[in-house]
Length: 256
Image 1: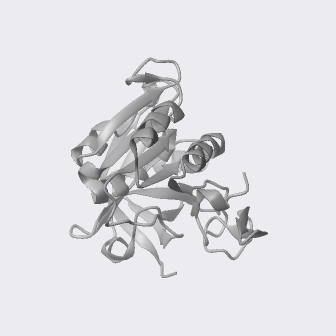
Image 2 (image 1 turned 45 degrees about the vertical axis):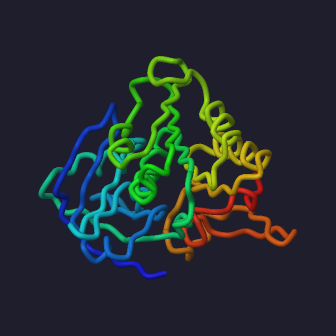
């Protein structure tokens, strides 16, 4: 796994929703080797531990990465306090990303909440061959639907309270319908309960599925052993690291 560390300039900042921000970072060396599903590890000023944030956009020509994150605690608040022109301490790209299937004719991208941003690089790759199903609790949290559409993906927005989008309820409702019509693969990122439900739907429909797991990380490179998850391969269970072996795993291999 090749990765780089340095301080890189922020060239664009945007507020997307309450406590959700988008940063575009100029980092040509990292952008050239980044792929969909990987993440970066950011050190907020004044803190000792880095924060993992999924890559939401890769522009190899411009040499930029985009990250979209939500303020959870003081560390992510410190990152949100940065502005255009400031430098950000970043390691990346890290982790094992999604499998790209050039022969696929239809893929489904399932994102829940802050799990929607990692779907953007996949939408950029698959374009009109992708259907993006996004789930949010309420209309105040809806993000990136226009960005997904700009790549040519069909978008289906779900909110649990029905305050926005076309579906009231969970992402599994439109996913069931889409899989009944046929799909080559499903790629998903979100909460563990959502990913487990998506995995079960895909298994029932015998559809290939990859999931991006979230876990607390300290080092981000597999050295601290703090982000272990149980995986089943060849009928045997083993613990692998979300930061190094993941964050993307085959859904059928995860011990939910």
